[in-house]
Amino acid sequence: MKKFFEDIKKDMKFKSAGPGKKLTEASSSKAEVVQSSSGSKQNRNAPSEGAQRAGAAALARIEQHPRPKVHTSQDAIRNQVKRELETAALADKERSNPEEESKVVEKDLSCLSVSGVYFTCPLTGATLTKSEREVHIKEAILMRFEEDAVEASVMMVHTFNKDREKVKAAVDIMSKYIENICKNPTEEKYRKIKLSNKVYQEKVRCVDGCREFLEALGFTSILLPVEGQEEEEEFLVLLEHGPDALELMKERRDRLQRGEPVRAQLDRQPQAFRPSPHGQRFELPPDFYKLSAEELKREQQQRSELVEKNAMMRTKAMREKEEQRERRKYNYTLLRIRFPDGSLLQGTFYAWDRLPVLFSFVRDSLVDGWQPFELLAPGGQKLTESEEVALAECHLVPAALLTFCWDAAVQADVTAAGGASSEILKAELLEAIRTLS
Image: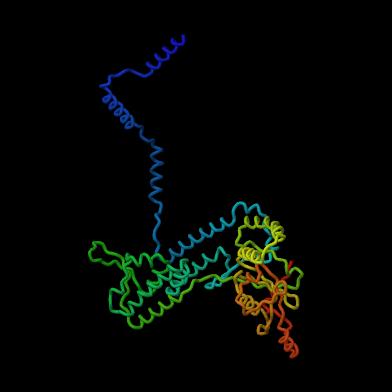
């Protein structure tokens, strides 16, 4: 019975294999199959009228789409830079504010000791946030091309490029261009710069602002024939100059060599406060920290471990190493100075600012700035103005309350002479005095 069913299965399998064929007919039958299949492909139905209209509309949109162009005008460069920098600033903001931060409870701005860290543009005087400063300064430099193209291009070279070695190399080459022209004013070859030249391509072209500087000197873009080539090439050509023009060119070269990056200056936000027992209470915004909000949260969780660490026996070197690592977490520090009458002066500083910067800030805020004074750090440590020590090294980060006192001998002489002022801080600070909450 088992063999009977197996024979039935074999018979069904054989019949389902299709009609038989001779071995000699294999190649011809395959060719017929290929031809028939290709014929079926050629007989596809044509696209409908609606599909044709949709395809034509899509093709029209593609053809109308503007292609990216290389902008050379100052307006185009300004717009391009603005778009790129705004995109970068937005990306930085998104990176520094991930979705996890939305779960962190934000502090009320009114409870903060200072609303944030701000900067001042040296070109426009505008007050800027950290995310705004780079975009604003580059925009301000581009706007100066209308007033002084040489000054603006020098600023552009030194500010737009982060790699200082590349900037130095480009400045040296452009200085050499000018020196050759001044030494050989009648030699035409020194007044032409071939833009396809290897040195220009690798050292000058890659540095933003170099071409603008050369054009500000008077170089003009011209297509000139090249020996041994059918096509013309682009050159920057300078017309022959007289002796006065050559001296002016040397002066502009010196300006290029002396150029420095334009940097936003930290706004210290000086603020006076009435006498308050809350002088040592600080609530700082996230701008004061190098850490993200998530890292700060993790740091707070780790603070409990410090209690156990402090209970352990550690060498002085180990403690100092940990303190230095802790101080490197901060970019800025908020300092308050308490005066003999109880009033307070507050200012924002870089964590790496030196003690002379702090003393200068206090002196500029006093009515009698000529009078010698002393500053005492928490714990009674006397700070010395002449010492070039960073605030972080004096354990004054991320915030600290200092004590101000006049030099006793000088103050006694001033009081005896009846010359002591009734006010310590300048009037403009007292006009905006506030109360610490």
